[in-house]
Image 1 (spheres, rainbow, N blue to C red):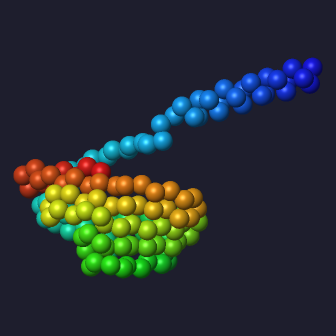
Image 2: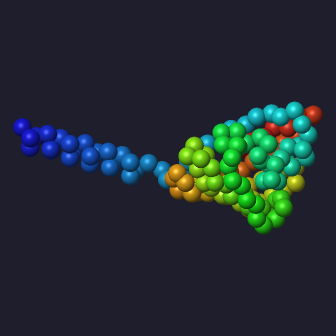
Length: 135
């Protein structure tokens, strides 16, 4: 009986390993919203990492989070580093591309509690007096 259980467990582990190895390494998550503000105002809020604290949900989770800024004041080359509690963790964002009132690309690096690197792209499109933002 124990040999049959070990064989079954080994078979399950092999099938699981095969299924995991066949999964794509890339993923994409997309969101969009419409904001009641002109595109240049929305762009400034995204492009200037100093302004993120005003609307970031992570800043609300850990108001004592330590933040530092390096590089450019805003736009390409701007860097934002944070260290927070166990819910917020530690990470860094670097603006790698910036087109006024149109597009911002950010390299997003999570350091703690898990290591991960992702790219976030914000597309900003005016719609009358409002702005559509997709990321």
